[in-house]
Length: 129
View 1 (cartoon, rainbow, N blue to C red):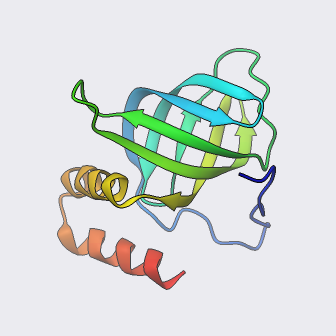
View 2 (cartoon, rainbow, N blue to C red; view 1 turned 180 degrees about the vertical axis):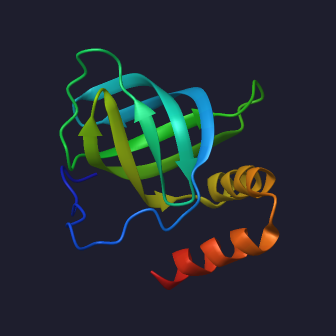
């Protein structure tokens, strides 16, 4: 894992993907350590998390987000880049996600969107990037 990633510029279009409100505990692993965080919302392309008070997380840092879905061990794990920090929250942009995680995330998004065509459009946009 390298130390930083390319951040979006002001001209980059943002929020191409539907965000699903999804409040749950998670772990964020980065070069300086591990933080217990709370996922506020999640999408196929990233997540918004609440950081613990006084957490030191550099903008542009590469990290791994691990979201436990159940007691059996099902989880969504993604390598991500910290794209912004504001008011104790951090925006993460997904860089790499494994097949099991994208399958769980796809199902979560599908259940919350209620429209399979919207999900297919988002997946097509993700593949086109």
